[in-house]
Image (tube, rainbow, N blue to C red; front, side):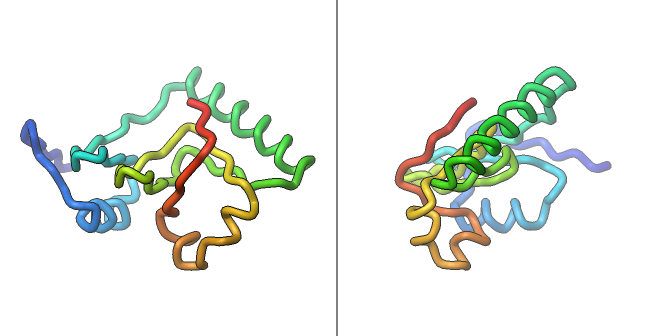
Length: 118
């Protein structure tokens, strides 16, 4: 495995982030509104177990209510400030999700409001 050293202050454009994210499926990445690239480390067993339970509980609630869609921690959302973030678990109201095009749903959805439980 080859490692790279990212210089302090290194910035990427949103388009570059999308290229990196699609090319490197092994790394979880986020992008701040300032263009700072954040490489997310994998979770340990305790955190992974807790995240799994949180996703399950939200999914169970969403299945009963049928008012929205639930996404896991690998889903990247584009926030109104331009940042690209992956919350531990998220829920989107169904009418907001359905307003997105198929291309937007398949890519990194641009969302104006998300419920994020981290």
